[in-house]
Length: 582
Image 1 (tube, one colour):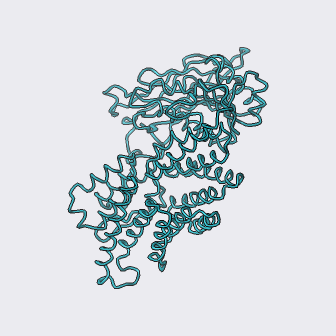
Image 2 (cartoon, rainbow, N blue to C red):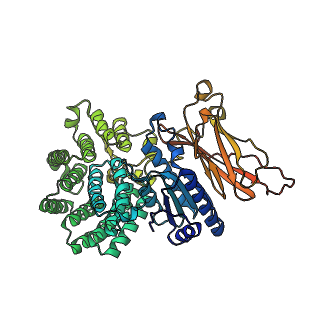
Image 3 (cartoon, rainbow, N blue to C red):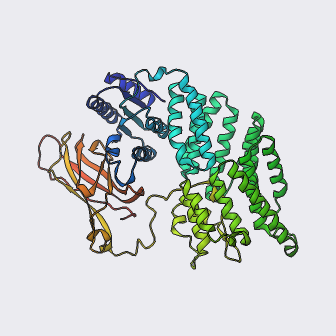
């Protein structure tokens, strides 16, 4: 499915794209390469009856110095936009200006990863890829394995942000070297990273692809790891799948992977720990012994963490005498929490350390009140790895239950309702945070309504206004469209300069729109070039680049008349606001 090389012949490019669904064109001047990509995309789209979407990396990054956006973040914007297009319906996606082999990670590799398992066609224009990319030396393969090892360490630490650039480069390195086994491990880790970031659909797609490749190359251990990660996806919904975890454990044992079997045993035990009558004490002890045998400090730390959590939450509710055993259980839980903290620090795992500090503080009042800044300290550790969800759980622990019983917005916009429904509270008003909350670091869901959005009067909203500046658009002739953000009289922007928002333009039909991004504060203007007469649909997404938040999304329909003039009046763009407004 991956192809990297220089292609000059249009017919050959069409055949290559039709066969592989992926074409990378490199080494040509920008104007020649862009024209070639456009010609291939248009012909393939016309033959298949598919819409064309076009992105240019330079357009996404030209304002990278503003609002704290780095070139890497601009590249991530392109990948996320492509992922959104590829996930909806079959289409033709053109991404030009991709700097292959850059020092901060390969955007090309991430595009290929996003394209995996898609039914769409992907054309990539690379500005500096080597002509002999397919014949790189075996040293590149070794680099790929080193990159994978570093990425795995970042995932283990709970810092998936740092893993992303490494995995992009690793995917590319293994693909150009023809190492399917290495590529499968890279895709697997990419899926694991997506699970950590709270993107279950992306994680599921990548993990399934990795599992199939592991099977094809006879990598039994990899297949077992992929099965275990797929089983862990179910915990996000609040309903773990112990049977799938047990099967992953059997696959690890069959492959002779003792470390993998220990991890699968741990997650199986965690999935069942809260079941009445489950012998969790014996199982946690058995798992701890397994990790000691393979000298896995991180596995031992998580085992102690969950063992302590179970002890602290039981407090005699498993049938023992509550009065006689509560103090003893709490002392044992404190000992386990302290052991977990020490191991997380040795293993340099801030994610595990932050969660253990939080649970230890909640379950041990004496420990918490010795340190009046306990919440600030834990919040600081979560903040260090960019885990805003973890910070939100600390906020909840400080604030206590809401009068209406509803979860706060910062949690509701990140976690499924089914998981938050399992949130409980002790008699003392301490939260019983779902175990699965610590398995991911989810980001806010785009379009999730903020509190009071529905109650705000219209004059306090900001609207998007689209204006067609050229009459009667015709095929293959650019027409200008102006985009404005118009705040109502009660909106804060009505009396202050408009912030440097970003407006992203997408064509949903047989047309192109340039540039891919504009800034409304500077007077955003787009050039719309249709390739067929008829009704064309465009989508404009207004974002806050400082936070990555989608503020509003509108769609417009434009009528394009045939080149042969005939009486016809074009329809002006009619915005269709989404639920999310500025």
